[in-house]
Amino acid sequence: QVQLVESGGGSVQAGGSLRLSCAASGYTYSRNLMGWFRQAPGKEREGIAAIYISGGSTYYADSVKGRFTISQDNAKNTVYLQMNSLKPEDTAMYYCAAGFQSEGRAMELKRLAYAYWGQGTQVTVSS
Image (tube, rainbow, N blue to C red):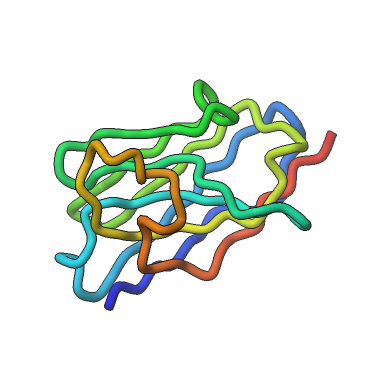
């Protein structure tokens, strides 16, 4: 089992920045991929960023590319999501997820790739 705890959400004005953190614990060998998803009210949960723990390859959704950066500190078993130039449409509940995938299957931003999920942290961007 892997436990994930997100933090760092909050309210910010458009154009501002936030950094989300996701601390992982438990049987960490059952994961090689970490992702960030978000879900706005009435919308599907979408994958926005992912990183392979070994090697550090990163993947982004077009909606956040160039504004968000996923990174990791393996010594702390923590993954981060730096969010810059935030827009009102970024308002959502943000979830951290962990899974085990083979790179090259285009699964990195898909929910099916992840077996473990955090409880989420709310991000609200006002105009």
